[in-house]
View 1 (cartoon, rainbow, N blue to C red):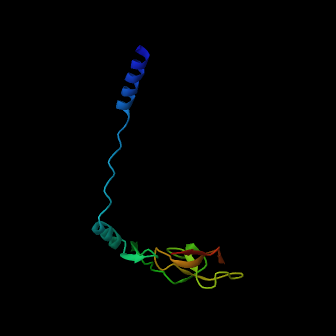
View 2 (cartoon, rainbow, N blue to C red):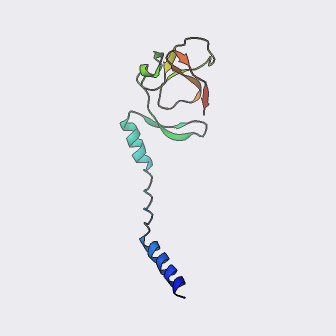
View 3 (tube, rainbow, N blue to C red):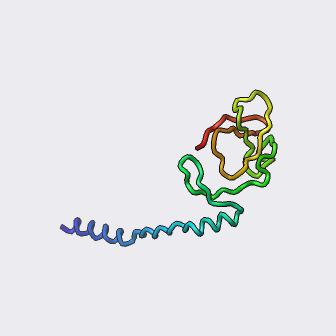
Length: 117
């Protein structure tokens, strides 16, 4: 009879020492998100197929010719002919959100194309 009581007591003591879960912080309000986005020079816009409101920040060099990410604030991308042969010239990503079908350009060569919606 003593062993079950000892086990029960030990289990209760261990349970009392277990950390409690911290409360989950509330997500930032829409106004807080819009203010933070605006501070980056962006605006909240519906994006993608699901039209989810997202902070979209334009890049100053968006559309500039490039051969690699190092030429751009964002990525260097190729749209249109996504299976080019040989060296290519891409264009700097226009915003921090890239949708549609494109290939990244690395050292003047297109990588595998991806489609994002």
